[in-house]
Image (cartoon, rainbow, N blue to C red; front, top):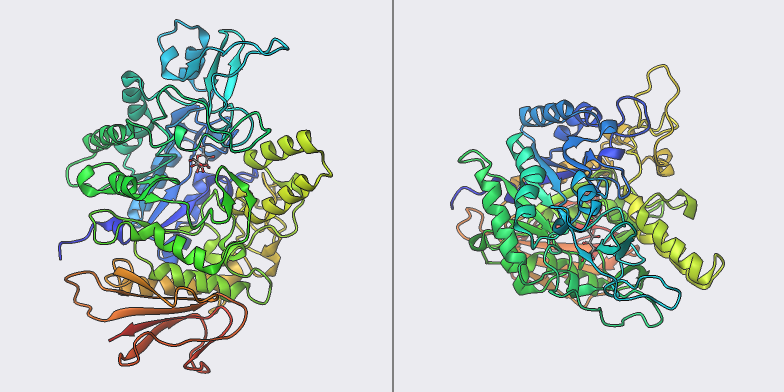
Length: 588
Ligand code: ISL
């Protein structure tokens, strides 16, 4: 077997800089705080960190609105702090992946300011400017098409000075680049990627990687929400005709910026896409990206176009969606990812486990057990290793995310504060808002700010967002480090078990469900990759319910050896899984 690429079996830990660790007591996390906590990450056993955007930004969308790609946002520190962070990570043998956000920049970026200065500016064509379609009866300009922004409201913003609209698929402070312009692309790769590659980063998480090529002509979206002025643009805004060309070009550029022999990798966020295109994006032969984040299993139950219209789903649907996230890469030259959480998702224990005090720990361990057994590069989001849960006691005014705020405003305006629609929205926000993953990290229960800020003898600063009150109920690093049965220590062991069985767990192939229709059991088998010294297969039996459940093994003639579980084995019954119990077996 050829030596594997490091990133295929890596565990990548995702850091949200605003909320990881505040080293200077200003209520915001920072890069020096991350350096301070590297020993914690090393102890957990991660191989790489992915840093969410730390670049200069007005923070309209928490740094995904970049005003200067080559400068660290001053609250997070200086460029020198960032170079130091990269050095310190490498010294500990931890790779560094950074976010590449190039579908749009901030409206404060120098390029956009120039572009909006006049219709004849040399950078006018670097963004997507279009004339009005005319005027409405009140004399207001009509947008070029009916697209709705992904955050709610229109996707077009009128510029009074130059009398044209610009496109923003996200917030209005996030104007979309015009990728049709070759000079823009060249300069963009250079500033957003080249600068950081030359400073030693090991790869990129490529934001909104399917959106750079839009449907030519930007036609109106079909009416999927009757009565609404703006419509979800779906396939019209993504996976367009030139997308693969752009990715190939980008990849060639990246490789030109790294020393020979250095293995960098890219993971693209391509939420919505058909199977064949997934393979085009990630096939090694295609030379585009190395792996993708897909959304079927995390956005399950959400209506297309609005995560806030959420419906219940069955375990069977979820099992199939989970399998979709990696099966497309089985026995191909593509690769896949394993993730349940990130900064755009709520907490997995609330969403897929049981966050009641009785079952939250064991269900968090079950999710860990599932994840370490799946094929692909594994991503753990900060706080997930503690079994963090959603903010169960929050009211709407505690949310900070622009996505929640814009949607809430829209609903308030249209239907009123006390409407059924608003109640439904609040319920959905409690379940799936992005803010549930964005709270300050709970380092300790002994401080009112959960130990987030290093405050010395001063009073602790007020954190930019409230911490999750669960830090008082054991969901904090300090308590969990000293408890051998904690979720944190379970994750540590789980990562070790994965490392000791990479051929079967991280690289295993031919995943097959066993009793797919079962309403509470998630059971599967897979086999080691070709050429492995390991010959035994994997059988996993996981109980996704708060009731004990009888289970059978797939092949009565095979022998089974249990090698990992999330309950003590002494009092286990051979054919019964306790609530949220999971067991992994070698199967001969
Ligand atoms: O439907 C979508 C596109 O087809 C969206 O789900 C989209 O892929 C997703 O919202 C993109 O998220 C990323 O870009 C956003 C930022 O707010 C998120 O935090 C980031 O992960 C804008 O840059």
